[in-house]
Image (cartoon, rainbow, N blue to C red; front, side, top):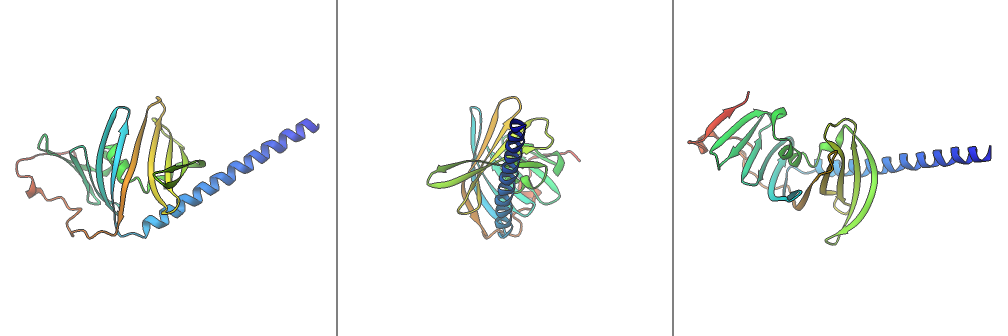
Length: 207
């Protein structure tokens, strides 16, 4: 009986600690969300790694709208449509938000995607470039491809430092934020697609 009682005590103690860690992780994510919402816009430079593939890019985000430049291709979301601009092929693809390139969208939604559909856990801490980074493990409640996601958060600024997607097949991708600027002066047409800028481009409208 004592052994059974001890096992039950250990189980509930472990369960209680797990719940506390989840609450602590959720609290930090909520603090990040509040901080992000306080900015009128965000501009960031990032590095993307996936196996041997590596590239640099930049993004400007204002509410749901964004412009992402990555590996020579630009993606713009004006709040209604996504425009993928490919200078190499002189082609522009227009689609609804649900049809956009998932990786580019994941960069644009790097700061907000975690709000729903995940369970949280407090993970390791590291010092990266003099910054104290706390990692939060997110496990998707339903996903065909992604096993888990790790968000690295700068505990001083409450800004996201990195995102690592671990896929069920064993591969992973990493987005690292190299610079983070807020409340920049943007033109009123910053998130507006202007067709006249691309007179010779083929327009591929998927709608």
